Image (cartoon, rainbow, N blue to C red):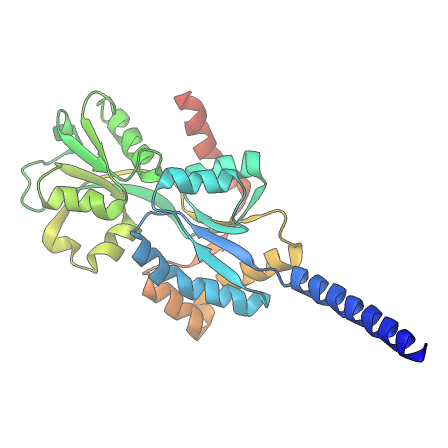
Length: 277
């Protein structure tokens, strides 16, 4: 009889321990951190893994870095609300915020300025010279591809019929197309341009045109993430210039510092999306 009672008590204790262990595991569930694929995947993981580790240290829970090979599939994951934290382009932000519960966290200082670059030995001297030429870009739904379209419109060139568009996988393939002569120009942006060429851009390329500016790329966080963790993430990102580890993160990717982002910052992007419809 006593033995049965001891067994019963042991069973209750085991069940209780399992329950509390499961609850603790649920509380420590990791976050998914997604980065839009503006660079080759190996480069994404090289630059953003230190960020994920820093987020882990500050939040006290695992942070799993992820990306996708294509812009379209990354966008699908955002629409599925897969990522708890994400680094996104401005056009994806508008949809993610308005329809899928993502909140702005921090954006890069300054605005996103599109660069249309050509080979240094190119005979082209102005954006108007691109009429009838081949213009390479990252995928069509990339922010810089849409900024390139805006620049062509402003120059009096129809972005769909006035030039031939060559959409590649990322900024690297765009620049490569120009180097090998498969395209006359590449529509890119300053940060990936500097990152990919490791400071050698002046010997290979020449900037033909700079576009109008729009608000920059940004970190977002899903509203399901607690306010405490959202605040911790924001503080971590804003403090990077003030800490040794943070400065290494910024220097590794040639990132400029970040500032707190607000939804109203991106109203100009919403206006452009409305005008295209």
